[in-house]
Image (cartoon, rainbow, N blue to C red):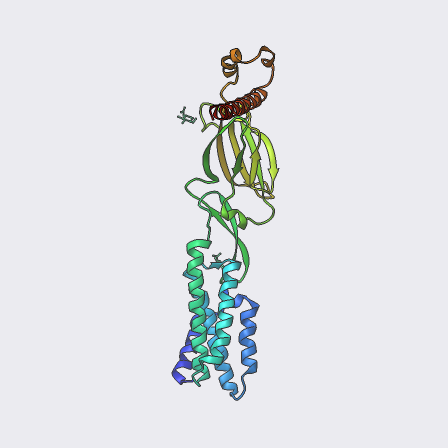
Length: 311
Ligand SMILES: *[C@@H]1O[C@H](CO)[C@@H](O)[C@H](O)[C@H]1NC(C)=O
Ligand SMILES: *[C@@H]1O[C@H](CO)[C@@H](O)[C@H](O)[C@H]1NC(C)=O
């Protein structure tokens, strides 16, 4: 190792205090390096010390890298970064060695920084505070202190409110209400969905009294055999075990009544035998179908008879 590099590293060690950072927050990565140092033969004590310095310095650059990306990482991203680094590290020492152990060590820990950076970039873009609405306490690790904590992700535009859906259905139909949002899977503890209902009033922005329908760990409910009286505002609240509302979704349901069956009966009545009047509509239909079938068969037979007769 060149004396200038050693000096450089020692200088950096003075400038930056020793601190923990993302990648070596995991025991896997620490052991990976320690095992490697313990395993190399044919090197002097001085070399050992220098390799150790290179690793320690890398830890500092990892921390600084993560600081550029909010200084936190989630368990999934950390897992991805460390498994990639782990396999790169193993591959490096079997396939890419140059003969200079110092140089090789610098190359691989630098690669570790790039791996970390790559994963942090994705995490900040997609994984950090992924909720566009509502409130999320996201479990993250502080890349400087290696401590786990909860990051408060509160959407500024519309706190808690996660939209309003307008639904329309026919009487007797069913509708599915589902207020699931992908970030709900990141909520810690056992959150519950609270569904409640109130009648449709003129002004939707006035919060009325809601009647509790169901509290369930499932995000969706099914309303069967809809009746017109069931239309109204359905509210879905996701609440954590402390009772804090994390997201709120409204469904405004309109139930259209089926066209009245009585006028049709009146129209059909004169053509039907009088004893049929009191039967339900379904029977009328069945009767008509049988009648049509009978008429068709009769027609068919008459035709056959005519054909045979003319021959
Ligand atoms: C991480 O921990 C350090 C030291 O405890 C603290 O100064 C810093 O603000 C924390 N960073 C975040 C993003 O919470
Ligand atoms: C509904 O109520 C809100 C607040 O009370 C009010 O600002 C809004 O103008 C009302 N809208 C209608 C259509 O009456």
